[in-house]
Length: 235
Image (cartoon, rainbow, N blue to C red; front, side, top):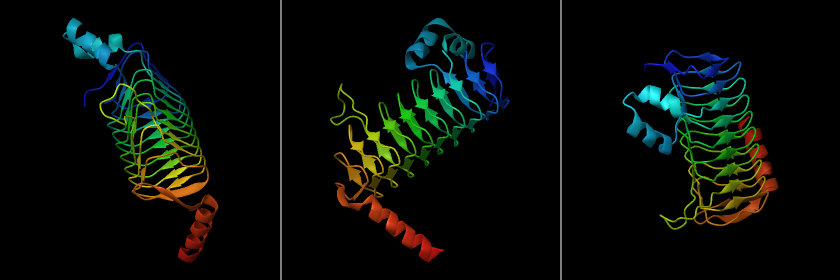
């Protein structure tokens, strides 16, 4: 991969020779960026490039508004981070993560390989997102939440509609592998969604739901008790 670093970029961390850094992107101290693209312009700016220039790299650099990576971030190979993305300190990305313009990832969060933040998405502090998760425009994931592999959020109840409503995942909530969360659904603080569930309505804080459609089965307290018993038995 042929790298490129904009003359407008501010690089204080370690950047691979294969990285592509557009516009006034700022990469803070202690960061490591592998062969990734950072500061990629939005569609509107890209269309302007196609109309005005024959040199794609220079044109993309000219129109990019850049992105921001806080201290000690890790961005692995294959990631694409669009312009106007803000990553706070100690954020870690797996391989092939896509983050669209306007997204914010707060400090200490980890995002697994091939996950997509497909629009303006808010990720809180210390969130743990596993691989192959899809988060559409207007999704909010609050502090300390966990999303298992293959989780899918949706934001369009009647595709293709003009009104979009992203789901909200409360602080300390746990979403099991391959669960599907429908548009506008609020998962309460500390709630647990079982693997493979389809959540069609709001989930109360500190409750456990599973099934298709998901239904409440017991409390988070009971979940934690069962977890402790399982770990004691396995240990």
